Length: 279
Image 1 (cartoon, rainbow, N blue to C red):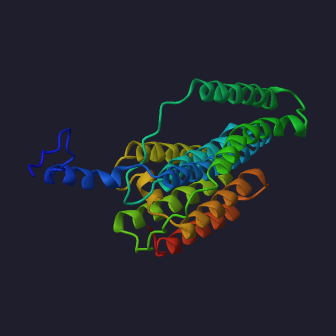
Image 2 (cartoon, rainbow, N blue to C red):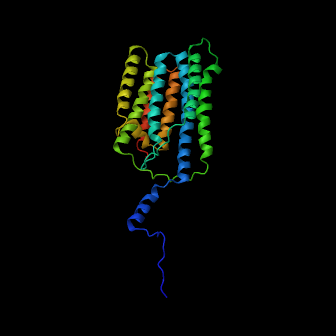
Image 3 (cartoon, one colour):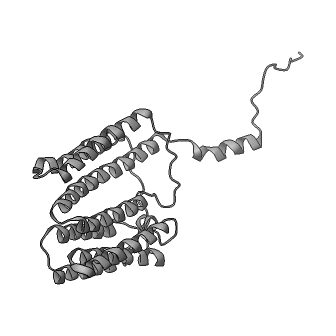
């Protein structure tokens, strides 16, 4: 009996086609990975909201009570934090996920938070005898806006699988030097905040110029984002303690010798942190 060959398209897979499928498999998006990215961004958003809210209140208080020079020291500390936090948000050993273009509603929401915060900030600074509620208002707007968005991201990432934590490694030479330099910068800030007269002006100018030069090297291995990317919790804890000490030195009636002692303490904390394992 003669058999008729089957007609119709066949699905024979060529070797090179199978190879392409194998190569493309790791690139397929995992929904849990997307949720994990949202969770990371949520915690970054919440920490940023808290930091900005604290900075606004402290900065307003310093401007009203101590003047521009003391407030400049706080601005320096805040800019230092923003650069380091940009590096901390990096995931070592993995490329950053591509983010979709910002939705117009997000842009509108950001403007809706920014404009009232700026208006309330100006009122809190320039209105005579501004009550405490007015001083806290810009921080409250930031917490409600940025913090609320972070909470929404966190709720949408509840299905995220836990990330594999990188094994702690010894800080490289550039990261260790950068960590110590962060301590030097914050220590100089504490000394500058308590120095009076001409010395205070010179230290303030020198500190800001040095920081601006360091910011220009943001893409190098010694740049602040690269230093922050190598940090773990001991280094972050050192930064929080140092920033808190800097705020206390600015807002409290502290003498120059006490400011110098606080500066030495900040420097020693970061020297010790530079020997802690990083990532």
